[in-house]
Length: 414
Image 1 (cartoon, rainbow, N blue to C red):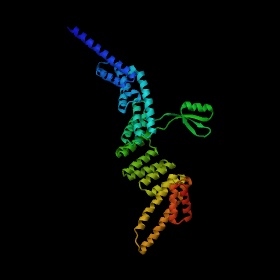
Image 2 (cartoon, rainbow, N blue to C red; image 1 turned 120 degrees about the vertical axis):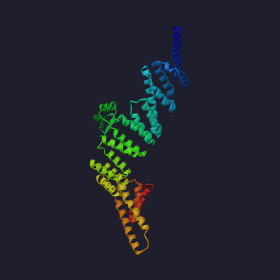
Image 3 (cartoon, rainbow, N blue to C red; image 1 turned 180 degrees about the vertical axis):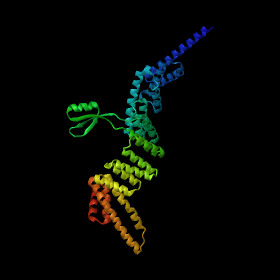
Image 4 (tube, rainbow, N blue to C red; image 1 turned 120 degrees about the horizontal axis):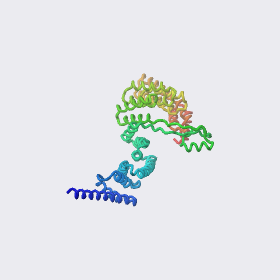
């Protein structure tokens, strides 16, 4: 009595297998004809029979779904994500076909991602780079580019999530660099190995070499901390920056980042301690000293800021930003003087005080003039500084210099 039943089951299994193959063949044929709607309809029918498919058929199903959804690069964002998901489910039976589709997707997405980024569409670029990472998970650089693009798009949650993934993966972004020195310019140039070797044969380049590029791990942990701050998660930010500093204890940029965080949290003593640590670590770094001046000014420690800017100018008299910022801090004192002058009455004592403040105001101007003139020495086309000097000379009654600056402002079109 059992034999007929087994025979019926065998027929059923055979019929299902035939139906599966029929739908898969139909989908394959439709895809080759660029009829993706028809392919999806056939695959929808095949999906209901997946429990009876063998591993090879399941792989073929996922490959065909990936191809039909991708539609030769015309897919919308949701279909593209679904296509990538199916592509990553394809087994070894269709390894060659899946790798061909993967390479096609990578080339297409990379072109679109770069175009979006250079065109200023950072949100789209971030999505495309993240899809690239899904297509090729072995290339974590795509995830890094997605994070960078997300910051530019001000999508800080997405950027933070991607930077955390990179940190968890131990991403460093280090690659082997090939370089040689251009004999004509004396400058070292980085290029790919084939180009470097070709240039060496030409005789126009000398001193070939190779090295690993700088690690991005410090940048990543630093950005994680800064993004936590941006999202008002200051405790997480401090934890992140301390982790970064544990990995790179001598990184002065990380020390400055933590100093800035501590200031924002109101931890002034910790802030000052970190500032001092940064100076001891690299006392001759002019950019570091300048940044200390900026941080001190932001923390309203004006005298300290002036000291750092003067130190920078001693080290490099042409450091325009330090010259500009120092003159601005000096001129900032004018505001309180004017406020006091405006609040005085007409008594003899008030008149005497007014004259004192007037001289004090002139003193402020005289302090700022040398630094502003130095800016113009380095940047003779700086119309804003020329205008400021013109107004200062007018205020202190220096007619000759006032006329010279007025002529210069007019010459610069100001």
